[in-house]
Image (tube, rainbow, N blue to C red):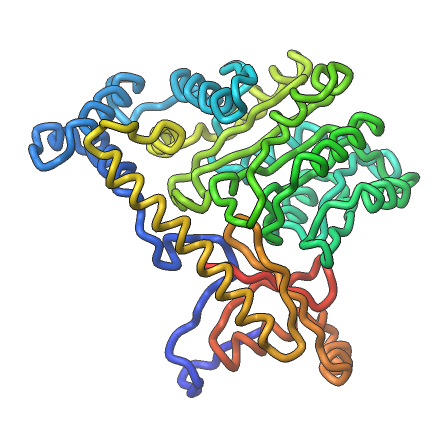
Length: 418
C-alpha cells in the first residue's frame, strides 16, 4: 500500500491522476449548448435572458414540458422519461442507416456502468460449475471485474491480440470458452468497441466473426459502445454491432441476443458527473425485458438532468440553428485534440525505455506494454505485490503520476489521453 507521509518533501508539486477516463477533470471544456440548455431548465428565469440563443431557450422549454410539473426536480419512471427513450430510438435508427429501433427496447440508466451491472445481475445464477460466466477481454475496463464479482458472475478472460492493435481474435474466444467448460456456465460475451482501455476499433469483418461465434455458442452479446463518437484511426469508422447484425442473414439478425450500452461519459460530451446512459436490447424475450424493467425499478431512477443532457447529446443543434456553428466548432476542437493527444502520447510512450504502445484508433485511452527488469519483478515478489502494481506505486511516489495498474495482464498499465 502506498502512503504519503505528511511533511515529507517530494519532487513534484501536485499529483496527476490519469487512473480513470474523466475528460472534464483533465481540463476539457464542456459543450456550451448542453450547459446553456441545462442552466435554463434548472433556473427557468433564464428564459427571459436575451443573451442566450433562441434555440437554447426553445429546447429548454420542450424538455421542461416532458417533466412532471415542468420541473427537473420531479421523479421519472425507472426506465426513463418516455420522450427520452423515443429520442434514443430515433438516434439509433438514424445512426444505423434506418435499422429499426423501438423505445420499448430502450432503458435509461445512470451511466453505462449501472446498466451493465443491472444486466449481469439479471443473468447471475448457480454456483460452482453451474455459476454464470461472462467472457471478458484482457485487458478490460477497470470496473468490469468488480461488477461481475459483485453480481456473483464468474469472469472468463479472453486475450486480445496486442500485435494487431489489441484486436479481437475468435480463435482466442474459442480457447477461453473451452477453458471455462466444467468451471462455470458461460452465458454472455462482453466487448468494448471502441476499446476501453485499448483504443482498438473493430471493422465489419471482426464484428461479424464475433456475432457468428456468439450465435454458435448461444451467448448473449454485451457491447459497450460508449466511445462511438471518437474514432480517428486511419481507414476506420464506427460500425455498431446492431448495424452489423441486421446486415447479416435472418438466422443471425432475428436470433442473436444483443445488449448495447452508451452514455454521457463519452469522449466529446465527457459529462461523467451527470450520470446518464442507455441500454438497448435486441432479440430479448419480452418476459426477460419485464424482469429488466423490474430490476431497474428497484434502483434509483436516472437523474432527470442527466436524462435531458442525454437528449441534447443525441439531438444536437441542426444547420441553421443559432447554436449550430458554435456547437460544431467545439466538437471539432475536442475531436482534433483527442486525435493529436493520442498520437503525441503514443510517440512519447514508445520513446520510453522498456515500453511500447500500439496506436489508438478511437476512445480516450492508450494501453502501453511495459517490460520490467527481472530485479524489479523479484523485488515485487519479495513484497508480495504484482510487479505492475509496484511500478504504479513507484510512479506515484516518485513522480506524482497516478495510473491504474493493469492487473488483468502482467506488467501492463493504462494511460488516459487527456
